[in-house]
Picture 1 (cartoon, rainbow, N blue to C red):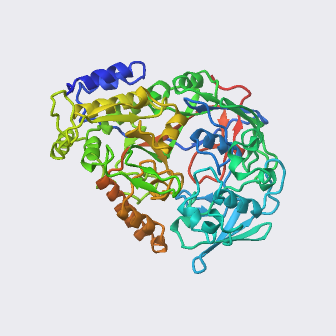
Picture 2: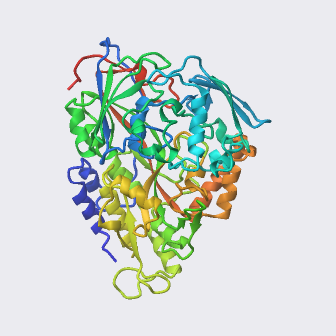
Picture 3: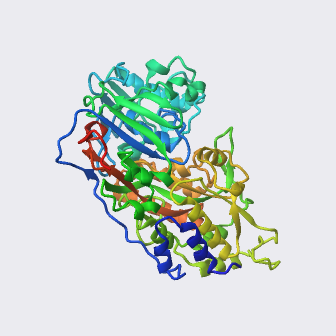
Length: 590
């Protein structure tokens, strides 16, 4: 097996120029005792300086590939597109710091638990960004498109099937969704089969993004994802609207005079794609006003005089997933393959215990990422136990698990064979670019090789973002293990990520106890907060036992903000957004 000193030597080589080499050298090759102090940041950027009128804010979209440019929450599956739509699209509902829906948005609502209905009322005189009237018919239209038999997006699943009449509509045996009733232009009622606790949650069971019927109705649902209306002329509900697009590279937004809170303070926001390798120097030079910064470069930008750093817990968990089966295209069900390469839970547990994420957090991320011991991010207080689960770094235990399960090095080449004596070669996939991905992936491969597993990069290199997700979705045999991020959004309900029929369940792991726990998470009985938390904890304990995934990191989002920016607020639940931002000078501070 590989000599243990190879690992720090490899990292020393990879980390040169990353601003963290000195931290590495201080470990003296000891990878077991490192820890990171989690850093705290302000969430609001205020200024007493007087603001100029209008102005153009420049926003760096930190990405290693071009964005797809699908400007619709109904169809977009790209995190870069989601970041762009933060300017032009807005939920009709507001929410508080605990991610519970409130009555301060474009829409108010009334829940009736006895009737299992939610009644929605839109404010008067709402408009789309093109000036057309926004009505509850546009909410109905979003449900009609998502539930349509020809819908090509990934949203349809158990959450939408819970609406009365949606299954019949989705299967093509009904022309309408009988459980959704439009009363007039501003009033709509939705009836549900079961009363789901996510009905109280922002980003949960009540869909919050209308779809413009007046713009899209003439387009077949099967063709809508690629329609020019969504890619070149999108209309939205947010404070800004798209003016011009350079596909994959930049978007110029202009103030939306029809925005429900009033016309924004800024004239324009220009968003341009900037690579992680160059965004630090770009912010230092004052070429951009705002960027979400790579944590691995923190030492390089933390003391810049022309920017202020804001931070918040990201609603996401980085994880390592195991390919354990495939999805049946016709039924939509995920099928666990008990003969798959990664099917043995002891093998998966050993790979988890082999990883020293405490060290990775300390050396690469300066306390801006913390090792995750569960899949639910800590921003959702009470959903997971802080200390009682998770995989600590224990290579001795990893070796014992492999030995006991029969994974032995029978031919003396330094790598283990399967219990049947067959070669065991494991392909590990990850997205190219990103925050120190190359370094982390190389380190993981080394740690797995240290316990005798022959792990190498799938395709021989890191994979471009869209191709990576296409390979996961199609269950490419080239991938055995992969690194990805589960973005929970504001609802930690894991059904769409781990459900038996979910297309986003890329591991294809299925388990009867998992089915039961997900049913309980979605049941009326868990409206009681204590009962709900207990079920979530039991579910996460099951994941720890079965190991379809290894939670690796919870991340802090760091926003670098040029000091000419005023009124920028990243606090979850804030009611003031991009429409209130102003600039205090014509030119950025350099």
